[in-house]
Length: 270
Image 1 (cartoon, helix red, strand yellow):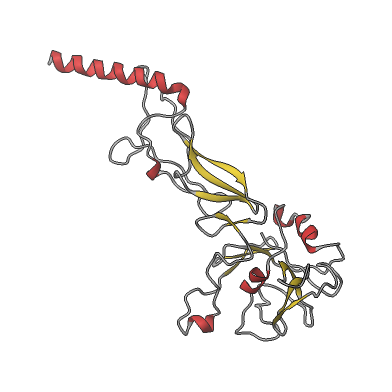
Image 2 (image 1 turned 60 degrees about the vertical axis):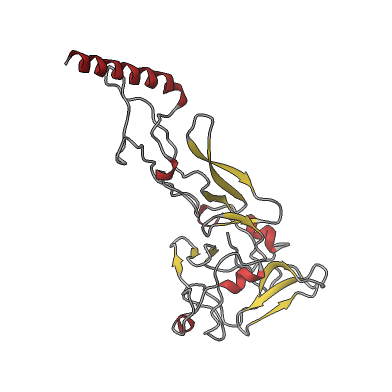
């Protein structure tokens, strides 16, 4: 009995010593990255980490006075990614104190952060996401039903591609559509950009005609002109591609005009 009590006191003393030594590190042993909630694929939404105290139950170590010690405040799984903005990526890394946290870095020039999990900086001129399919195509076996969510703040989120769009379009006389989009703060976001041609195609609904787009999701005036993209037409100098949902077809600006000229439309994306 005496030996058991002696071992118990020694163990408590040891744990208290460990707790004191780790107090400045901001974490306790027993935290496992594989249990941490990941915020991958979005602007945030990271969950609360679990502290493993045996059997997966949360555990907080305490000193002899019963005071709880510090725990890691990590909220991500090591290696998880998410977009900090349209042009920057956050990755979950392990710090010097052994705790994990998201660290942001800018995307390389010419790339954007695409939110579809796993989030990554990619060239937006190439589809890095699945193609949306109309309901009639899904009925014939196509895999990805086009699913748009009205965020009730002037934006629409495409659940298939992960892109967020302005719901309304602009007829603008700004010098360029790229400058126009970058100056927007729709729904509190300041990372809007001019979409590429493949991104404009991604919201088209080719089961519809004149226009080939769901106008309950994306309002469009009858007779509206083509939409500007940021995609440069190969072999046509600085000419940019445009998409007309009323015909529909893709055409080149042919070197005439710039995004934002009267008669053409801009719908920004992030």
